[in-house]
Structure formats: structure tokens, C-alpha cells
Length: 174
Image (cartoon, rainbow, N blue to C red; front, side, top):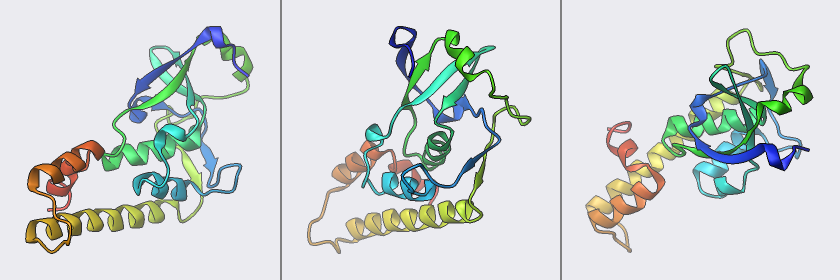
């Protein structure tokens, strides 16, 4: 348990936070696979705001993940897809470092973490590919008028901008 007087919530890009572990398990404590949480957030089955906050601390002008390396990996994958540009994280004062004294900074400088699930990377690629195809089909259906319920281009763009995917439709899926 952290001291509430030494923390605050910040909004930051997941890619700006470094890992404090070299590897993480492929599942959360409740048995959900990391790739499944990724899929659920991508398809809006889970609201990213309902995922527990990652705890971070600043050490030598860099942000480090003290608690939530698995969630951080999922958020970084979502950031790569353009889904979560920034997320809320719990920023802790460096005074809490005594409780994490046994943690070692990774040899890779905290930039990467190995997921102990041999299929994780392939699952992420497959889920992302299927999602991008769905978005592209939706865009194509709207443009061709093949939907029963059509959106004008401005409405479609508004929906996509809300999810930050419109640029992916044009840039990444062309």
C-alpha cells in the first residue's frame, strides 16, 4: 500500500515509461492473458479507464514502472496501434523506493520486457491485423453506401477521431 500523501495521478505516453523487470508472465493474476486484455481494449469491450493505474516513479529524470509492468506492455502495444496516446498513471514520490529496494533496473535500460508467452507477439499481430481489416471494411462500407445505417464522411471521421483511428485507416491500411 502506498502513502497517498506521496502520490498523484499523471497522464503520460506509455512509451515514456521504462520497465523494472526483464520479463513478465503472460497472464494477469485473474488468469486473463495479456493479449486478451489488449483485444478487449482494442474492441472497446473493456474501458481502458477501468484498468488499474500503473505506479511510476522518476529516477534520474526517467519514469520507471514500479507496479504494472504487464499493463504497461499492453498499453505500449495499444499506443503503437494509435489507440491510447496517453494513459493515467499513479506518480509516486521517490521516497517510496525503499519498498522496492530488491528491484533491479533491467540490463536493456528498461526499454523492453519479455512476455513469458511464446505466442504473445503473434497474437498481438493477429489481433491488430484483424482489427485494422475490420476498420478498413467499415470505412469501405460507409464510402460505398453498403451499410443499412450510413454515416456521412464527417460523422465517420468524428467516430474515428474519438478513437484516434482515422489516421490509421489512411496511413497504415492504405
